[in-house]
Amino acid sequence: MKHQTEKDRYDILTGDISASEQVSVEAVGDRIKSIRDEKGLSFEDMAKMTGFDVELLVKIEKNEVQPQLGTLVKLSKALDSAFSRLVSSVGSKLYSITRKNEQRVVSRSTNTQGKKLYTYKSLAPEVQGRHMEALMVTLEENPEQEKSVHDGEEFIYVVDGVVIAQIDKERYELEPGDSIYYLSTIPHLVSAKKGKANIIAVLYEG
Image 1 (cartoon, rainbow, N blue to C red):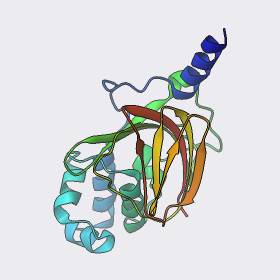
Image 2 (image 1 turned 120 degrees about the vertical axis):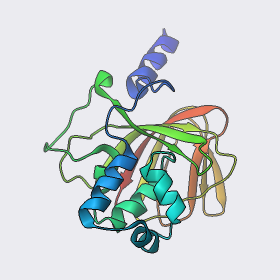
Image 3 (image 1 turned 90 degrees about the vertical axis):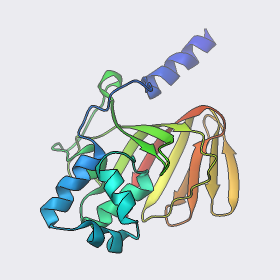
Image 4 (image 1 turned 180 degrees about the vertical axis):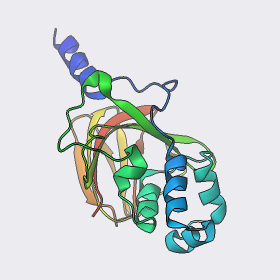
């Protein structure tokens, strides 16, 4: 009976993030292009403001590369736009209750070679003017060790699987029930140790 209870708890927390599930909102690259066009910025302007290569920016807008969360934070700063607008569109409510069957995959992140790194669902996409983004994330293995640095703060709670958290030069293994809080300005990498892992992540823009 205990095993069934734990499984039910896991199912309630994660929902079902399957590889075949379709992203249910406008693609991230399309949102970035829309905002860039609104502001009249060229790819060269964006490259100077973010430090990213023009080639990478073009691939992101074409949805050939799905940017990691740290990359999205830098792009949102350059576009003077709320991070939430890039991740899960603009909300319109003062509060949000998201039922299990209402969770929506908002994007999948890949590295520059196109390898999938994680898939995430926004848990509060309808709140207007929010400065935190609550996400349910399915992590993949990331053997290439690509660290991220950006403004803000992050809190991660492990739901299932084993997570590798590399914070600056330190490396930690986190198991279900473990959590970690860190400043995003510290070089960091979070990935599944083996196969996949599910986490709840809360990002504060700063």
